[in-house]
Image (tube, rainbow, N blue to C red):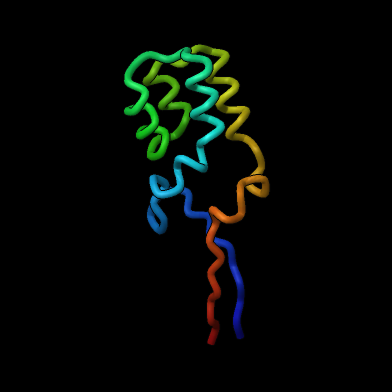
Length: 95
């Protein structure tokens, strides 16, 4: 019997975020650059977002309250809204 499943790899173990991060976080990166309300190196910030929870990155780079709130709001978009081309479907064979 064949079963189909969608695997959401949220911790970089199966599929590296860095390979899709520019597309995945495009709106967030745009929000950050347009606001400019952070401290530190932008390239380092981008790298951290791809491997560290957003709230920790926001605190580490001293995001302003509005930027942090808008970033969280942006990232709360339901999973169904994420481009399905970024997710991988896997066929699982049963016994």
